Length: 288
View (cartoon, rainbow, N blue to C red):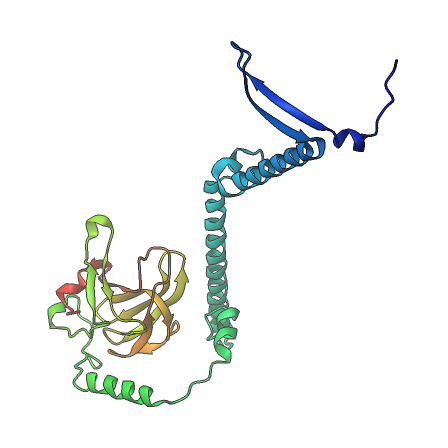
């Protein structure tokens, strides 16, 4: 006779026993007694754990790179690097456009644009308010004492074809510890000096700023043209105080030591000195 059909709820309420026998002796080794509801709950818990483990494995391991259309870690790094380069290139293009606009204004007899920084830098420094403090007065007094006996070539004779650099007094741009010296063999054309945080960088000689910009590799950079075909370069600054065309005197504050740019391992100044288009060792003429 056909058994009457039972509802699913009634069948899940039945008790089941899973018995394990020894295949050789048919001896009962153990058993597991479960209800239909308990079995359903255990299967649901095991499924949830498997789903969570799968999600964690994909989210926090390199297994996700095996999924189709998922970018690899190397590709993600390239995308970020290209975005930074694009931002730097856009900044350089804006500076170039302003440079050409100034030349056009000079030819047309119009006023030139003095601002070489982008609008974001202008907005960032627009609302800065400077207040005089006791520490500021002490710092100013210290700088004045250091510059009291500064001998510079502010008034020099006409430029000669050959100059003895050892007779020129270079003002020390930053006093600190030299961590990496001049070495053209590895394309290191300057000297790295480490100093305390927020130390002021000073111009080595009188001159005119020919470059005040930011690059991806060297961060905020400043270049000054001096007499006798000398150029001094200051890289990885946290902030620069001068703009292109500004005249500076030896010992004048021009920047703050920093850690900007990709090619840096910590706060320091990368200082270069060029003479007649060739780099020279700054440590031969300056005591840091």
